[in-house]
Image (cartoon, rainbow, N blue to C red; front, side, top):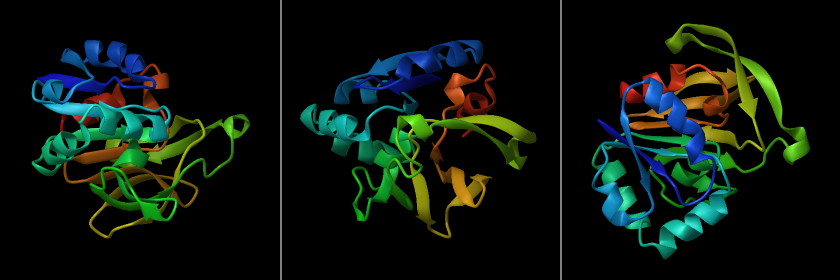
Length: 185
């Protein structure tokens, strides 16, 4: 199995130790051709508008959308979940593969970043220390989307078929729980 890390911008390198401990090969994806060499993709946290610009500039948007629609597992983290959503801040999203609406920086600027305990029953976790950094908020999720964790009443861990999204950053914790779950998709 080869896991791609979208390497156009953002915190993609933070996933390498987790994936190494999980025993899988990785590829930093910066071209449409590299998309063909991977079995699944992680879209990291970072700046969603910058990543969207680079996806377009490097002619990766259509090939990536096709791979996801064909069933390639993908995990969007924070900015990555924004790129996957079908609506962002009331407008059409970039990849539009996740039937959900999201609002960017919904909890405030960088200073409002925080750690928040969440329960994740599907992973058998109570009080997981979720790290939220300028996080988006899912305002609406389609009934076909499974919500696996909440921050108060806000969905923060979603799955729709082969698409996984977290609005927090599991890669900043020492455990590999979310990476292992993603590898099981």
